[in-house]
Image (cartoon, rainbow, N blue to C red; front, side, top):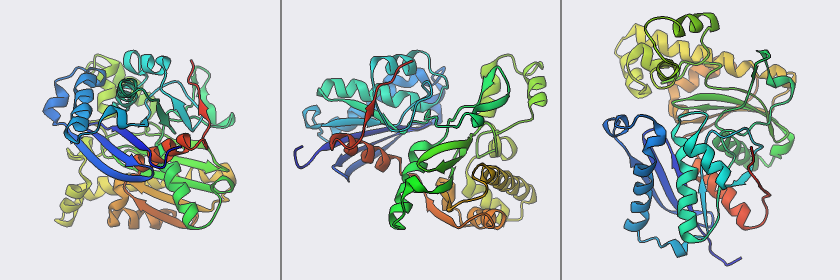
Length: 358
């Protein structure tokens, strides 16, 4: 392997596309390409945004004078495919077809792998996803839902939480593959995952547990059925929209901006305080619910994601859950670094590349 490798990293979010260039493990360029709500709302769904997103990534490369021939690998955050094991998957025709034409969830993450494969083909290199959101390592008992027709699946922030857990373990000189860790990703969507001996064996997805800044979380099933068959909402898409995007803090307070909400609380807004505390209350229950899976034998709890930057939220949450285990806080997301980590392991021949099939 030549001494320096150049990695292109792509991560599509709801209103932005993050693009980075890494030289080996060192990030040398990053751009957070933002799209206004007006731009996003022009499209009937996320899939229709593909050309706009692709052109913005290619413009980044052109503006930064990055030549296709200089790239050694293209990495992307994964999308909603069939469930897979964790690790690296080459972005093949089957994956592209699934994400481009028939994704399971209309989330911006479906676009990154399609763009990555397109650019990789131009560059004559390979493209991969790593620790996709569709990673499912649940035990058989964890897959039982309560309805034979529905199997529980894992759809959580695997990429960030696994990387953060590994990073903390390295700092503590501990082996990630030997520990039990609950990791909470606190962002626009909140997901909780139980990492046990290197596998994510159970989760609380963003449709199961706490509500979050813009997602409704686990709603009472009978009431939800009544809502779906009521007169106000005429399609599944309409209900999905209020649950993902217009739920949570947005539903109650009209915004998903936690900083703004904390300012309102500081100004004496008691209703904002009630809703904010309710989110933390539900979040604490979601975290604690995973402890029995390993008989309460936890090594530590990790809080990560953008909301972990809030001292107020973290301190309130600690009061509810500190009895479980030591709490480690690593705010923000490290998805770009995590994708670089996966890409370098592939280039170094230290990561098995799996084949995506359906």
